[in-house]
Length: 127
Image 1 (cartoon, rainbow, N blue to C red):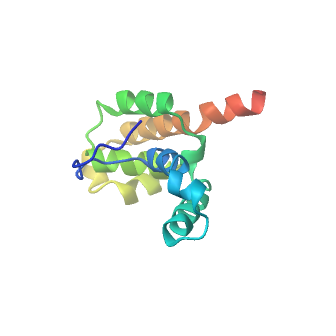
Image 2: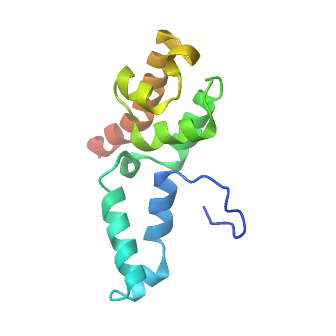
């Protein structure tokens, strides 16, 4: 995974941001400058979000499962980053969700998000 210069309209998931920041050399070399402080604080924040338990494979699986859903890229990314657990949370994240998604589709989205969040967690518990 790498950052492509000049492509500022690219959307990144929290997982991708976390991995990029963890690999930032300025963070590892210079502990006292402002960039290092911001990088450190951002990493600490992201480590307390669902992205810590995600993987590239799970994100690809999530995106494939979400292809058939009537959601924008930004909505899919928001769902991936925040991992909602209730229909109400989806309603708050997806604009006009009542008109665009049936109850069955909302439940399917919740199941897809649950799979992204829990499969790696289950694997970590086994080791």
